[in-house]
Length: 408
Ligand SMILES: NC(=O)c1ccc[n+]([C@@H]2O[C@H](COP(=O)([O-])OP(=O)(O)OC[C@H]3O[C@@H](n4cnc5c(N)ncnc54)[C@H](O)[C@@H]3O)[C@@H](O)[C@H]2O)c1
Ligand SMILES: [Fe+2]
Image (cartoon, rainbow, N blue to C red; front, side, top):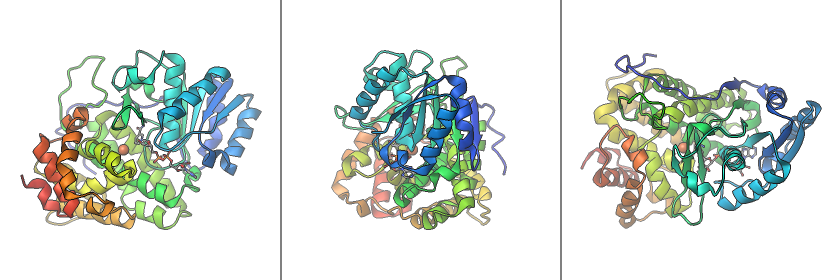
């Protein structure tokens, strides 16, 4: 695998401790008790009822921890959940927060840690670099292979006063430790497995194709710095691991090597996009998700081939690196790698077009205008993406005619 030697800078912000491996959840009690005795678990009912959690709970108590459990977490993290969790947390006065679950539970743990350390409401921290300093430590233990939230500086919130989901992005949100045990993903429902896996694939390939920007070297770099050498290296490692395995874990939830590869790929993709950032697929998904009530992973997965097609004028060399990571050889590696992305997503049951998820063609201009408001994401693209470019991608994604994404 060759990394672009033209890239002369690199930035990486990750948790100080990352454990990855089948059975690594056994290390959680030692890590947590090293950070404090009073522990608040942020999770949801589906996970709390499973034997894996019962075992973790028992071993936490055996390690001398006093454990409170907030189990009312909800997918996509509504604000009401945050208020209830913070109220429970204020009573428990924890030393450490354990986020156990999918991206929604880990994001909840991050926001609870934020609001126990700094004054609310959470809306004052929406956007980039608004968090003033360190938080209560968060230990993140994912049970999906997808969001990478266990290593990222982001938490995504659904605020009923806002038309779209909003993000809090700050390096202070990066967990103190991430323990990624693929065994915990065994119970994950097939749909969640497919959608969160598509999200991880989008993280790796959007991070790889993000715009190149030479940083101004200050402490306050933007949270997402664009494509850079360590990010690209991790993005390719992620793509290599996710590419052949997403279909396998959707077809067979008991395929341990494939589950392991997906968790590893998701972790690497989180480290890549947590510093490099994502771009157009994520911007467009905000408006499409709000219009169709489809999940984040489904939206960014569906859009990915069309977004990659739009980036081809400047990203063919990087897409060729992804082709090499997948063992693809041929005259048009960039085109072939996008064909492979289409096949991977089809194999995971991700719809192919925006028409397939019920959007009307006449809605597209409004959706393009809305996506343009996510300026941070749009500006992280490798191409200048004005409304016309965003609309071209949407037309391509609506009709399934990929080359349309490059015609404007
Ligand atoms: N912070 C970040 O960097 C980041 C990145 C991408 C997405 N996100 C956010 O993450 C959220 C999506 O997270 P997700 O895709 O991991 O799903 P999720 O956390 O929303 O969970 C979806 C459902 O799957 C269930 N589930 C998860 N793991 C399970 C398991 N092992 N066994 C049984 N049930 C299980 C949950 O109980 C829940 O009902 C969205 O809110 C998205 O915006 C955050
Ligand atoms: Fe994502």
